[in-house]
Amino acid sequence: MAGTDRGDLTRTAILALLGTVGPLSRSEMARELDLSPATVTQLTKELIGHGMLEELDLKPSRGGRPAQRLGLVGSAGRALGVKVTADHLVLVDVRLDGEVLGSWELPHDPAAPGALDHLADAVESVVQEISGVPPLLGVGVGVPGSVDDQAVGTVNAPTLGWQAMPVGERLRRRLNLPVLVENDVNALAAAERLYGRGRTHRDFLVVTIGRGVGAAIVADGRVYRGARGGAGEFGHLPVDPEGPPCGCGARGCLEAFVGSAGLLAAARTKTTAEGLAALGRAAAGGDGGAREVFAEAGAILGRATAGLINVVDPEFVVVLGEGTADWPLWRIGFEPALRAQLYPGRRDISVEVESWDDTSWAQGAAALVLATPFDAAGAAGEQGRLVRARLIGAAP
Ligand SMILES: [Zn+2]
Image (cartoon, rainbow, N blue to C red; front, side, top):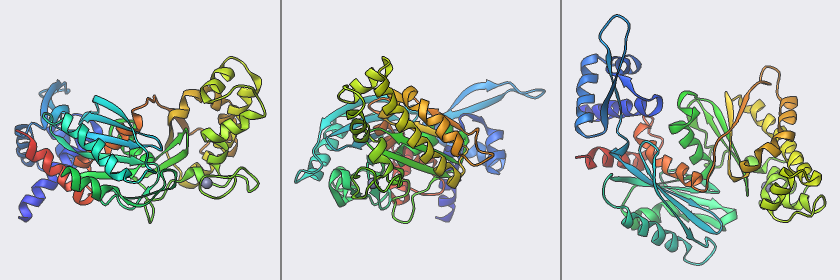
């Protein structure tokens, strides 16, 4: 039994390595994982047999024989990602290599009685629709709130009206599938680790702007969750005690100034543009008042982000979220405010804005599941073990 466990762990380590750094030759794997070439040959043969790895191109090597590289098979599995918002659900069906196979947007009222049953009905209907090949490894759920533990999935989310909601337990019982539940920004960070610049970096920040403001802290290769899964509530960083009231009950939080509602409130005194889309169009068209709204929000966000960078010392920052559509307008205030406030030696840190669409949040949720085969440290717990078992067991 111990031998089997050890073999499983080594197989997971091979998948984790290829999942995070991309295709490698067998000798590179042996070196990276400190395994004997014979062990790597044996285990990769099994993984190829299970349909999880494939032989790719030959990598030219100086002097010796060209080395055959091995990569993950994108069609070895897939996951359903679910993003829960205050008024709808977005679901995406994503392959192991990140390719999106389908997406759905469904109405949902999280505050209604029976909301959890409605959520389970919606997810179940899509699960039935997509059953087949590649095998569904599990369901990832992203929520705008704190989650006790990915693998337990009890949610506290004031913006949804949820207190101690047993989301993970209810969905698992209904679907009979592994279910991982996580804060939505932390889920984006998991996707960044799996598919983005985070593949090759162990310390970075994800900052999101949009309806709310959030952050995920990736430290030493793992999302920092805090004592109760509530780390990264960047939107509730205090900015001004005299500021506008915030949804959390306090006053003058970052989100109260630069979240969508904060932007619209600031716009009322500066421009006639109504609604976020109109505000963005007015600013892009040269409306001075509208431009000021974004520049001031950018400056507030820039100062706050500098504070977070000074505390956490990341290698870089990724900005995501629906608010990034107007980033060129934010940037005017953001850049100078950020650089002025950064600790010496960090002033050249890179801040990158990545492409964003309506399914990005849900893709992050799917990454919770798709990352678990590569989760050698076991952060996803029992549900992660079940995902790995499905990956190995479901293959032909
Ligand atoms: Zn707040």
